[in-house]
Length: 136
Image (cartoon, rainbow, N blue to C red; front, side, top):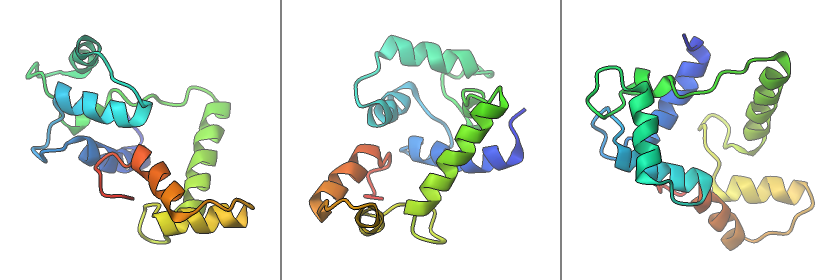
């Protein structure tokens, strides 16, 4: 069972993978989003195997609960601490209260860290990871 706080965080991830907003993730949607996350194509066969591994009702689509079965859980205190660190790092870059990183908030934080990246570089970074194409 996934912890309630973890499930809540992954609800937004699920929604971004569910491109047609039908409440289920297809193999095609999974491939598209994995490409955005990994940066390269995922073979259709690999995506099908991944979906099949969590698809309890055998519709070849993942609902949110089935999707959560794919979420790796920290097995050690060290892994849990690393996850906590990633959440804290995200919080440094996000727009307060919005739960997202914008090009302006990214540029502001990078400037605080001594980087002089412009708005175009920040846009490119965000485009690489914005799963739903909304630019944040």
